[in-house]
Length: 235
Image 1: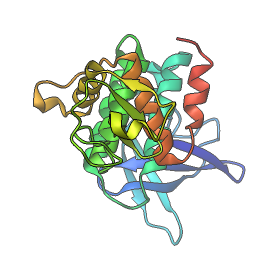
Image 2: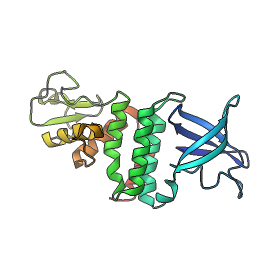
Image 3: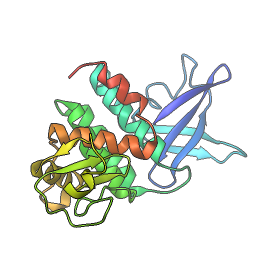
């Protein structure tokens, strides 16, 4: 479950991300009542198996069985805030009723990592780049995004407005851009790789992590609200 909003006195509209239908909205009737049979199940970040009835405008959830109870594991502020970033990105990037099984697998892998590993915010750079890659939005890292020339210089610069990196020649026209050293570019490439590659990494350099945030803001046209909240919690 990505998010929820109230409906009437006792119901909620839930925004879900499913393996078969992608993102969709559904009604959980009576969920706000004290003795609701959905209590503790249809909670933020939980993975559930659902039965639903098709409605004229919204589906109605009939039953829910928990597969992975993330909610009880992310109650501490940092874990919750990181999970909120992941949920906001999936919600923002994915259109309704479009099956994206790779995104579903990526989302659930991230939720499990956030729930269980120390230092949960380390999940964000890799998750964000993998999401961009799966959606066909990954930044080109072999050539200058402005002129298309192969990147031969040791140092390149992130051009968030163009959604990639630029070489030394183009940098003369676009100044005041953050610098990326060879190890940062290599780190970005490794962050974007699937686990099956054998050379993927979860650890991001400071410059690579900042670059990923800039790329996400470029594609969304804004900085995610959950990222701003996470930054208030400190390092």
